[in-house]
Length: 262
Length: 252
Image (cartoon, rainbow over all chains, first blue to last red; front, side):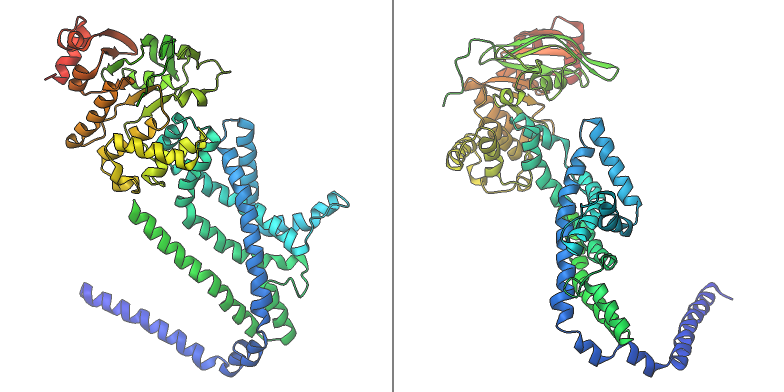
């Protein structure tokens, strides 16, 4: 067989396999049942407006708070890791490795439930909002601090030298010269962290939320259980995508722009 | 405008300066003094320690041993507020090091505002004056990336001048420039020298040294090999190593 003929045969048989699998699925699947379980319009319509006004709103609020808390903590950690004081560097390294190595769920459970056991009378206020955002923020800070550190290190050394030789203290040089440039560099990876955080708020289900504090996943899952129908999950999946896809698209554009600027 | 201030102590005094990078001794006992209004050019092969010496003057490099006195103030003393001393020393780098995220005006204003505490109007006035001095008034709202290398370096000089320094350090200011852009930077430096600015210039521009310097210092292997007036040192060096260096770069 000629080489080109052989390649053609392989190609067509690959298509054949695909057609076969789709055909078998189409013939044997219970389409009526699938439609009822996943695409029940009545159930879907029933979810509005709460899926947006309560669940999506909570998801966005939790994400925003965890992101802000995480970012502040991450900046402190990044500066600690770049510090000339060895103890600070080590503290930062231990923190980062610890919380990157653990499942976020473990950290959230720890903050919400283990701390009140260890310190009776002490509990993080704010229920799911407080405990969840702090737990998630702690985890996010571990990841984001490495991003921020990389951003700071990507700013050429001469920038710090120029700022210092104009009489700026280290702190002023950092604030006015280095960090503004570093953040410009790391906006795309930070946006990626934000997308991950949006998805991680689904872990808040362990916190025992009330109807008013449910985020998207818990909201969808409770409805699925009560209606014994998969449609709520499809709806919340679409809501998640409506939030995350524009952000990932934005990241791609920003990355293209920074690449072009270099 | 006056850039000379009445200070009795010499602008720069360096005594028995040593600098190690790890095991390597880059400066091996430097004694060096610069008088008011003096223009000193540091020349020598790469790795001779001339840039390190310059960077020790404003403590961008920490001297390993020895003393560096700026207008009589010992900056190697840990009690000295080096940030305050640095405002009196303008520094110009080979790579310009303008702040790329700020416009030219804000490059010139930021240290005036954040270090000297000048208000925006005053800082803007000074910035405009210095930018006019280097002949780039029309670039005030540009970002550095839109300027040529020569223009960027002139802005960097203006930025240093905005702090009203008593002296200026130049670390190979034209080495990163295309040949046709070197002249405009040297012209600005020449005007500064004529206005009476105290200047220390690390350079490979022998013509500039010959025309502008009051004194030329030849360094090699971390020591000052020879120093003297430019005519004598560049045309008629006494030391064999200086002769060899000058032959190698073929002074015109």
